[in-house]
Amino acid sequence: MSTRTKSLGVAAALAAIAVAIPTAVQAYADPTPTTTTPAAPTTSEIPAPSMSQLPDPQGSGCDAYKNRIPSGPGSFASMGTQSATAAIAANPDLSTFSAAISGGLNPAVNITSVIDGGPYVIFAPTNDAFAKLDEATLAEFKSDPALLTSTLFYHLVLGYLGPDDLHGKMPTQQGSQVNVTGKGGDIKINDSVKVLCGYTTRAAYIYMIDTVLSPGDAPTPNTATSTTSPTTTPTTSSTPTTTTKPA
Image 1 (cartoon, one colour):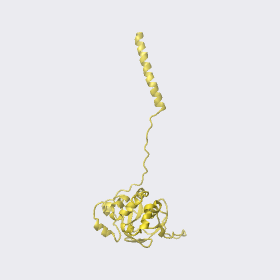
Image 2 (spheres, helix red, strand yellow):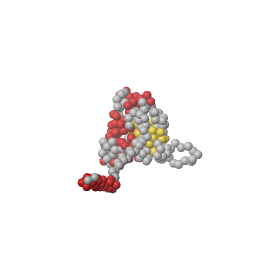
Image 3 (cartoon, helix red, strand yellow):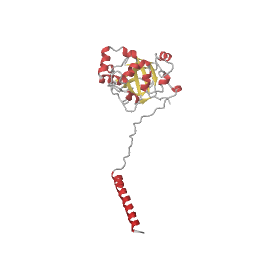
Image 4 (cartoon, one colour):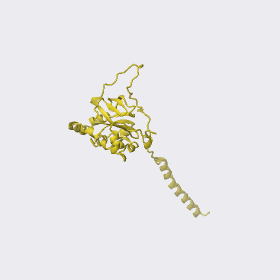
C-alpha cells in the first residue's frame, strides 16, 4: 500500500473518531429525557344504564314534570344516563341551582367537580324554592363564597340512595345532618321541606325540593347509643352508602 493511501486511511479514521467522541460524551452526559404523563386520578366508572333499567321517579311532582318534558335532554330517561351536573343543567326547574353550583351565582364558588366525583344524594332546590328566599339572603350568597359553599354542601349526602332507602339523620358534606322522614314518593327533609320528585342520574340521586335548606335548621345530632342497641345514624365513613345502581 502506498504512503499516500495509508495517510488517507489514517486521516479518515481520525475524523470518524473526532465525530464519534463528542457524540458519545453528549449521549452519556445528557441522556434524552423520557416524559411520563402522570396518570389521571381514576374513579369507579359506573356503566350508563339503559332507559329500560332506570328506576321510576317518585314524588308528587314527577308526573307533571314528565308530561311537560317527555323527551329530550331534560327528560327523566335522558337525565338517567347523564352525569349529575349535566342532569341538573338539563333540568329547566333547576336552572338557579345549576348556576349556584357552577359559578353562575357567585364566580368564586364552583363545586361541579365535587358533585361529579360522587356518588351523591343531591337535594336540589327548584327555581321556585330560590324565589322564596329574601333579597338579602340572595345578596349574601352572591357576595359571600363561604356562606354559599356551606349552604350548597348542606344539600349533598355521600352515597347513592333511592327513595325507599332514604331515611333518618344523615351527615352532609357540610358537616351538619339532615333528617329525612317518610318514604317513597312522600319524603320530607328537616320536618318541613318537601321532596317534589326523586330521580336517578348516572351516578347520583337527585331530589327536587321546594325550599332551600339551611345548615341553621339542622337537627340535633344523635347521641351515642349502647352497642347492643340498633341505631339508624349513618356513619361518616369514607365509603359511601349505596343502593344498587342500574347495571
